[in-house]
Length: 222
Image (cartoon, rainbow, N blue to C red; front, side, top):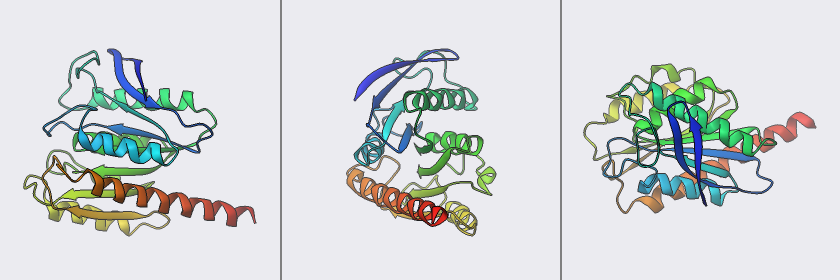
């Protein structure tokens, strides 16, 4: 894993990148705002980064503007951070020009940014949203959803309404040709000591979607 600095709209963006040779997939991981650690050093950011890289993804995680070595100022509405995520995805694609399949994972605020980005980038084929901040942001734009996704809910976090997350999952799951998995974890938003559980769910989901895509490609070429 290598520390990198990416040219963003407000200056340098700090990230860590792990390259995988001959990878068919790339992954971008985005950090939260409401946890004990609100940077790319967050425990679940690290777990998702490992899930991608251990499945032969070229993987990048970044600090949004104003966090640690990333320059610029935090924007409460998230528009600047959405620009940061798009810049990071552009950089990741330039490092892997023969790879078309992109995945995005985000925790809390990072899940909202990632969801916004996947709706704008048709190359994104899968997402992982952890602790979807459904009371803080409107996620209605996700329907219809263009990509398969894993949604993980912390059942002890009272400000993330389970009924609203469940309703979103139900709405997305009615769509054809995509897979939506929903997992509840007995934890608050910090997921302390739950890193392995999230990693297991994530890797299982990655394998399922990648296998489905490979089968679909094989049947189309037959």
